[in-house]
Each structure stands twice: as C-alpha cells, then as structure tokens.
Length: 295
Ligand SMILES: Nc1ncnc2c1ncn2[C@@H]1O[C@H](COP(=O)(O)OP(=O)(O)O)[C@@H](O)[C@H]1O
Ligand SMILES: [Mg+2]
Image (cartoon, rainbow, N blue to C red):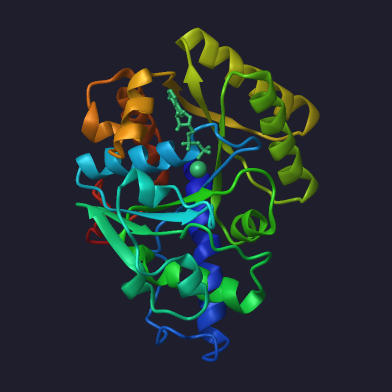
C-alpha cells in the first residue's frame, strides 16, 4: 500500500513537471511552482448511485479535520452538487468556473476549519470536459494540493471520461458499495471497467450501510475475491460504515454526521476509515498533520 501511495504522488509529480516544462499557454493561474509535495488525490467512486459517496467524502474530511489534518474536497458530481448542501453553504464559484479559467483561490470555500471545498454547482451540466478545461481544473487542484494532506474527489456514479482522466493522471480510486446485490454487481462492473481500460490501479473498497461487521466483511470478501479471480486485480478492503439512522437525520439537518451526532456508530466508522487512509497516504517527508517536516 505504501508503494501505491508513492506511485500516486510520483504520477502526479510527473504530470506536473510535464505541464511546467510544456506550455505557459495553459498556465491560467500564473504557473505557481508545484512539486512532489503535492497531496495524493482520492477519487471516491461507485458503480451505483446513492450508495453514500458524498456523505463519506464530507465525514471523512471532517474526521481528518478533527485531527488537525487539512483536506481539500472537490465535488465532481457536478450538476448534482450535494457537498454544498450537506455543508449548508452557497458557493459563488464552482469547479466549472475553474475549468473555464477562474482562479482556484477565488473558488475555494472553507465551510469548516481545515476543510476547503471546491463546489460542483447544481443544475449546470456539461456533456464533456475538453482537454483545455480539464487541464485548467487538474492544474488548479494540483497547484493548491501541497497545502493539504490529501484531496478527496466526490465523483459522479458509474463510469465516465472524468473518472478515466483522473485515474490516468494519478488519482487513486476508493470504490463504495453497499451490501445490496445491485450495488455489489455495479461495483464489480466499475472494477471491470478499470481493468478493461487498463488503468493499472489497485482500488480500495469501502462497504457502506452494513447492518453488522459480518455483513460488511462478507460483502467485501465477495468483491475482493471476484476481482482477484476474474480481473487479476488487487482490491484492498479499507473499511466499513454501519447503516445508521443518525446519518439520515444529519442529511435532513444539513449538518455533517460527525458534527451532529459525533458518537454515532457511522461516525466511528468514518473516523476509523480516515485512520486507515492516513496510514497509507502520508507522503514521505510529511508529518501526520500533512505539514512538511525537515527532509
Ligand atoms: N451509513 C448510512 N446509514 C444510513 N443511511 C445512509 C448511509 N449512507 C448513506 N445513507 C443514505 O443514502 C443517501 C445517499 O447518500 P449519498 O452520500 O448522497 O450517496 P451518493 O453520493 O453515493 O449518491 C443519504 O441521503 C442517506 O439517506
Ligand atoms: Mg453524491
């Protein structure tokens, strides 16, 4: 896993170097220096919609923040932007504005201490992100990423060009499923897509809405085993979150679970998952809080 995290940073760093060596034409943000201290980017994905990605992103970010770790959360389920709703905030600029050339700095929201958000914007749809728009957006994220311990990208469900671009450029997939057969089957299809596209990733898996640890472990084992057997793909079981009525309550209240009911079972699951991710994502030369240490 440690290898995976360093591979992730290496890819990001290589991409950044190629951008800096290449064109100033693309440097809409003034070409701020970026280096290998760029934070790992995690793409939170699922085959099926409604499995809990957005709540996972928001509460994972808050779990990091509780420990003083700074996180950037990017809402890439653009057009159906739920992150801003869960934080009860109203963005002026979104990911689409950054893709169209707006400075990243101006688009960032800070809904909670240690948590910055690039909002997705609701009701504004784009069929496809062209190369220029994509490069502006990815570069915007990359340029600010050294400030953070990690970047969480809340993706649209299913397979899409946006996800493919991200994974090709070094983002690491975290796949979310629930124990429902539809979610498991669609989760497997997502893994298969990664294999067919030869993305060369070793995804992490999260089981959400499990009634018990046994149910979560059984769900994970089915996917991990199937991926190994039929796709020759290594999938790591990162953790599970309990099916918890307190989570539904928190959505209705537009207050993240970790703040509304911090002692709830699902909140503990998010915290445990955050620890799992941190253990594997910490860049060499950085302390536990994401700050750079003496090299
Ligand atoms: N751990 C959980 N326990 C109970 N309900 C959950 C849990 N996670 C998600 N949900 C329910 O599923 C809904 C969809 O979650 P959301 O995070 O928006 O999914 P996605 O982003 O994958 O579409 C939530 O509004 C909530 O009602
Ligand atoms: Mg969502």
